[in-house]
Length: 263
Image (cartoon, rainbow, N blue to C red):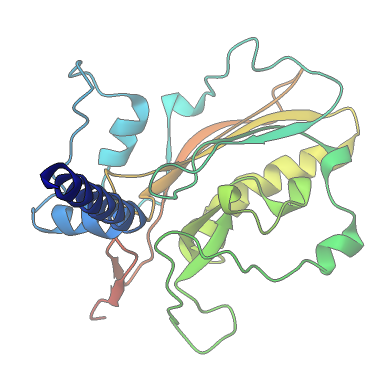
């Protein structure tokens, strides 16, 4: 009888443990962020990292915005390898899986005119419905485009027609995505440069890479690292980091909350 009762008790304990593990898994983002919020500077470190030398992306994540939205990386020279720049006579795109926090990762492509959606499809583009990590619908003005955040494509829609794909969409400010102010640069600046080049000829190819840069377990990227290089010529060539900021607003990158600063 004792063994029977002990067995039933053991089963109950195991069931409870499984339930608790399940709850912890589905609430892992909130739990980790709660732990981080108890510290002052998100004191989470990679315990598997043995070297003190920071990677390029770690160095970029440490950068703080000081008024210049776009800064060159590696003297604006792309770091694609010879294999990266091989042409296959057909374009392609490759998206990375979401990480354990549900955040998009690096996106790569070999862009070509043949991949670009026709004009009629571009005009009839469907409304975005994906809720990107850290997204909040925050108005900054009265116009239709006056929103703090866009759901920003890594591989722009105009290049491949990919739209409602969670692996390809991040929470980006309007200033990061498409800054319309005079002489301002943003993601659309470099996307337009690439698109104009591709439209010139069906024989034009551009190796392209866009990577959101996160700081620790924050849901909203601190910025975006973009590289582009045309194949067989140097008409397109850039390597830049674009800050995910909005003038006049303070962003909590941990969860996407934002407050307007006193003007």
